Image (cartoon, rainbow, N blue to C red):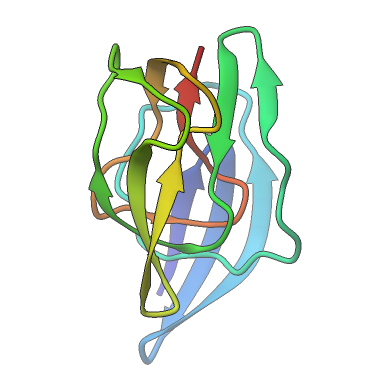
Length: 125
């Protein structure tokens, strides 16, 4: 079966057969779409650097994996080094920490979601 999965303004056409998922096509989406659970994780080639936006710093996923826990919510005051997210990747729990003091302006993911390298996780200002 072929599914269309939207992650951070990109649409992935994914073919799932016998428990394996393969990306068929990737398309950039212009319109903003509400966050939804992701069906399949997508392999990445190179890690993306954090992106600075007008709303502050966006913390991106350093690797593909599954979000086990989101420890903050919008409006939370955070300190540098504070654990924000627990990301399971390669059967290990990885802590994603705040790079600086600030306030969480947006949480881009949900607990249980699959993410790829470079996907936006949290914005801090």
